[in-house]
Length: 288
Image (cartoon, rainbow, N blue to C red; front, side):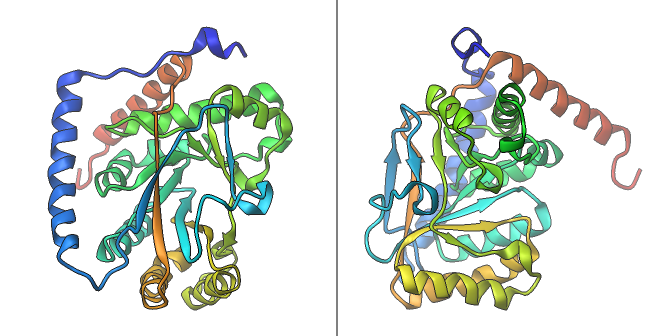
């Protein structure tokens, strides 16, 4: 795939984008004002602006990079969504603590519920990507794996109202060398993890809580992995955030220096997929 010849940043109607951005800014501003007055919440200790030029790697599990964070600092990350019934509960828990996370969204999930993508975005969280269909890229050809990455980016971007970040996580943390090289060429920041909730192994919130807190107390900092499609995480999040605050941990919010650049061919495919969904929804309205 000739990335250079295909590269074209997605464009949108300036008027529509400006209106949407203004609405989101008003909501975020109101929420931030309420948060500022409350010292009994986690909040955000600091925000790190990351330059992903050259495809930098983050996360101690695979890449040994732990210098991003100081002692008792954490980054909250959520994979595989959005899935409304659980993603919304996670967002509500974060909002109650006036804190922020990074959501690594799957493209087909964004097409299924673009409004939920925008809800996460409007709450001030970082939007990142996690391929189109959550396929294991280590088991795919370089061409198909590259397509998974690109369609995931374009599908999430089509749902959002603001430019999506160039932050990417491999499904199953399966990162073949060919795709690490591809990410480098595309200036994607690749995020592994330091601490795993293993929430997909259980439906019990208590189990997720004990698993994540045991690791965090041992390691004292790190990029934490949850899945906002999991019931166990949705129902554990409030207690986890309460405990982080009580035990003196600090949340670091990661944002990108520059947005991701989408590729024109995948933008067209993403637009068609979103349009198909809108047509299907219009043909079978709720209560119709």
